[in-house]
Each structure stands twice: as structure tokens, then as C-alpha cells.
Amino acid sequence: MIGAQKVDVFTPCEASLYAPHTVSNFVELLSAMGVEWRSEGSPACCGRCLYEAGDWSGARALGEELLRSHAGEGLVVCCSSGCAAYMRAGMARLFRGSTHQAASEAFAGRVMDAAAFLVHVARLDTSRLSFPHKVALLDHCRLVPRQEPRRLLSPMGGIELTEPSEAVACCGHGGALPSRFAEGADEMARRRAEAALAAGAEYVVGTDVGCLRHLQIYCQKSGLPLRCVHIVDLLAEAQRHAAPLPSMAANK
Image (cartoon, rainbow, N blue to C red):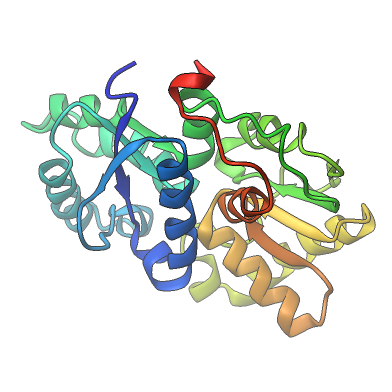
């Protein structure tokens, strides 16, 4: 696999602003597994929000910078699955027919989100970890169904995964919904939260920083007893109470 043990950790602007601890926890997991990593040094915007808002010119400018800062052959890993999905598909469409088409297609093939990396490259064995709680999974609506979060969580001791009835519905964070259609975004969040509670969940666990933040804000202002947690944070916390992780080479 290309650059399997040397990865670029991409920190999207949303993670830098609202979940820097998630990025820190991810690189902590990488270091514990002996994975060599680097960061571009400062948070960056992938252009996803501009792309979704129809500002393709602005998105292209950010995309060109992204291609320059992550030139090479190693994997580019992102803790926010929505941004990773955009970098894999949206950027390729954005640069189709341009002088950057080949570079954007090559870049797309190197991008992974954190959960996919931990499953398919690092082959993280989570059977040695425990999390004795009932968990509802928050799949990104553009990435349904996703098996990687389930493969990471299912082997953990004491965990009980639920599949809420609203599992394939948008949480309300997508595109410009929260800023332009706040009432509709809150209604979507309400449905997701109440479905998780109806399934008996204590935690909502997902892979996208923005979706988790949107749902947590709704739960807090509505007084709902749900904690929304990124899967990386859950794994890092469980790891702190377990034996040291084996190196990535040992998991191959």
C-alpha cells in the first residue's frame, strides 16, 4: 500500500476550531502504533463548504493550495469523514478537464478518513479495549452504510451497538442547513437524537466533526442526556486504560 506507514494528517478548519482534541488523539494513536506522520503545520480548509455553496472558483483556489501542500505519494488522513469524502470525490469533479485533473485524481486516491485508515491500513485490534456503554452510530449521510466504525467498535468489551430507526437520515449539518435553515436543521437533529434515545443509547459515536458538533449542540440546548463523541476520541480514551498498542507492523 502506498506510504502505508507515513501519513499526512490533514487538519480541516472545523476540527481545528471545534475539535483540536480529536486531532491530538488521532496522532497519539498513530504514534502509539509506530506510524510516522506529519502535519502541514497549520489548519486548512479543503473548500468543501464553498463547493457546497456553489462557489466553485473559491473552492478551486483552496483545492489548488491543498494539492501543493500535500504533494507526494503518502496517504492523507483526515479526522472529519465529510471533508475526506469531498476530497475523494468533490475535488476530482471540481478539477475535471483542467490542468489539475491528473493531480486531483491522484490526490483523491490517497485520501482516507481516520476510521478507514485504522481498519484497512493500521488494522487496529480493538478487542483488547473496552467501553461498557450503549452506543448509537452516527453515519455520515453521504457515506451510508459504513462498516469501518462498526468493525472498530464491535469487538470492544462491554459495548452495545444500536442501529436507530433514523440511521440513514441527515442530522441537519449538511451544506448550509444550520446557517440558512436553522429550524429545519434542528428538526433533523431532533429526529436523530430521539431515535438514539429510543434505542437506549447513552452515546452517539461518529466520524464527522461537524455532524457530531451539530447534534451535541442540539442535545445540550434541549436538555437531552446524550453525549456525542468522535470515534477517535472514544478509542484514544479506551486505549489509555489498556495495555500498549502493538505496532502497525505487528498487525499485518
